[in-house]
Image 1 (tube, rainbow, N blue to C red):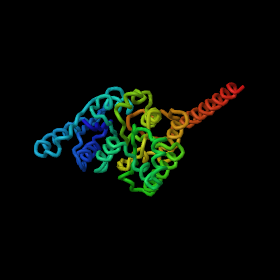
Image 2 (image 1 turned 120 degrees about the vertical axis):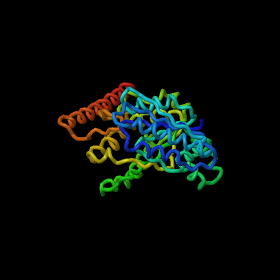
Image 3 (image 1 turned 180 degrees about the vertical axis):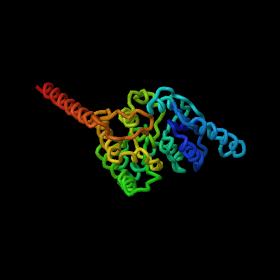
Image 4 (image 1 turned 90 degrees about the vertical axis):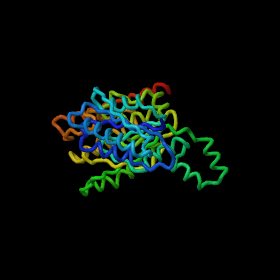
Length: 317
């Protein structure tokens, strides 16, 4: 098995079949063996039935089309609530030497599997090598020998396929800008669970996801993996639902984009870990007292910085 694709699912009856369709309709230049693992995380709707219905449809289609013989689809269950638990279970049971993941409301582009495979099979970073190709041969060789580390993970952009408001269209345009600026300062993309893949060997080495996190488990994994090698840009877009951003646009941006991204990059943990369902579908509304929680978290981080500075001063003395 070359690639395992893990899809955590919680109450996804409206979306899961479209996601699975996109994963079996892939353009592969060469034969790539891959499996799709859907992990149902205590869904209360018909998610499980929809997955089993699709598996039956696929298995019948597979008998008539030999081009599908390299694909398997499985349904697993994880009773511990949370996307980190669901992903962890899927990754641990994956048979591929590459493990990719996306979300149940996502549609992957037709070259997604092929692009992921090429990156790891040939240790190929499109942006890195395109940059190097413009340099003189001796300089290029010197840089490769000096800074080139094995690729341990890759991650790419997402876009909303339902950007029917001006605000969501603006966000669609700003996502690559924000990620580009963030990646520039840290010289490495941050893993995004809707569109990423890792080498199973290194996933096991770092112990996988931090299952105590309700959100940001993907960012946390990226921080741990970056100690062993490079995380590179995956030039294959995944299209996602904008539902998490429709409830309360400004707060969703603050939590998903700024607060937790920057907090993970600076301190290795999320600033806000309050989302209590696998996909954050609960109304994201500023409840009474919630702003006080956010201010308290900021104070904790500031005190942590002060402590580190004081420790450094003592060491120097």
